[in-house]
Length: 186
Length: 194
Image 1 (cartoon, rainbow over the protein chains, first blue to last red):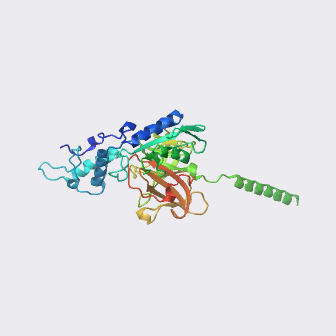
Image 2 (tube, each protein chain N blue to C red):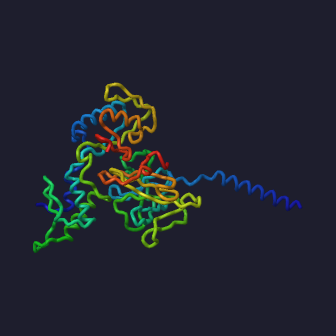
Image 3 (tube, rainbow over the protein chains, first blue to last red):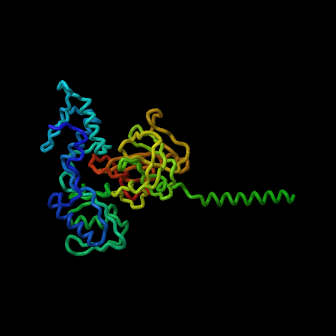
């Protein structure tokens, strides 16, 4: 089983594809983004699916390196054959080596705060996107009618009229995180 | 006598001039003088609503993690690679900065202040309290705070105590991974503090 270390950081990358989202959120997200694009809004998608395996690797590397978690106590995860507990030449547990390898992963991921294991992103039910537009936005709603948005600001993060349009597609805004939209607003 | 009248006239002109200068003096802008510093693409970056920061301008960094500490840095140059594509505010301007010493804040975003004055309370373990400073020179101390939302950090500056005082500045930093939120409503209202 491969040992923990920085080589794991490049595995299970975060997706930027709407195709990787879970249905029915995927369908609503694709229609909403298509409507925005057709309305000449600029849409930049940064994150869609954050693989659960990535969240697992980030969460436990941080816990071992920064919170003194015993590497031997980390639960296994299907499809992630990582060995958190390192051993020395005599086959004895090498806690220092385990923590050093975990810290290298923390540095590779660029982690500052403890990552959580589960979220709407790991479920495929959230996407992060930056939306901007010029002039008045005339955008198709989920029911086939159009919505004219003349209000300010002209950003997806803060325009409550656009948030209502997204709601119709089942793409709900979490106001506390400017790029974040999800299936339930969390 | 005429000399006295002359001196009095000159004094009156100077006094009027001083009043005029004082009245037209622009107040210290929280929006233009405070931003967020964080590592991006392997370098230390600053994003701030200010297009006019010259190279070598001093920057003071406030790390809001307990115990709060201060780091010193300088503007290196405008640097588009420091721009955060997820930043909600297109008016934020990206700069590369250089720290005077090895970074103590790691990957955590910190509050960055330019054009600051004297009168800082350093904070940290040595000083036994949080960092504070009278940034706008009104005789009242500003305090610094951060909190986590679902996948980002909200950094704030308050006159008086955080949460109960007056919110003077707020900016969001996108992390790109999920964390446990601990923000209060007062800290995440994106319409406030600017």
